[in-house]
Length: 94
Length: 86
Image (cartoon, rainbow over all chains, first blue to last red):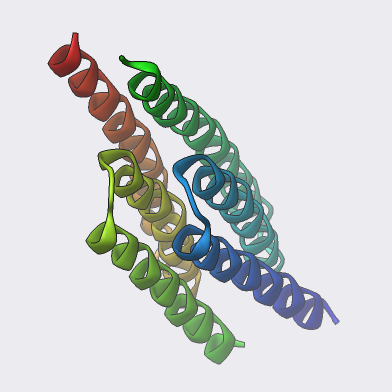
């Protein structure tokens, strides 16, 4: 039962990763690409980490996976903001 | 179950490959920088998967380091762009 739930979570995470990458390739400009990549990939990583935590069945490993996910969330939010602000500044330059 | 983990590591590598295509076609430096962002998240996913697949707990720490380095790379990129243009 736990294995089934973990498999479902891991596959859902994989789906969001692939959706984010396809968005990175297909969307028209930098801001929409940033939107697809940052949101979809972090959700994918969260689902994957939840599935792996269920798979490991060890509370300390699960806690560490949660901490890794939180660190990735903070890091990618900061860098997405930096990249978008940089692009915006260059756009308005005369 | 371990087959599923191998499969998901392969899927994440496919996702990284699609990101590298974006590096090839560009067009701007910011678009290329997005691939670093992708490597930050998909690389962390691959490392976490391989850590549980091969029972190597140290790989989780490597994943944490990779996530932080991706953020540092983005910050360095914006800093360098700003000093070049100002």
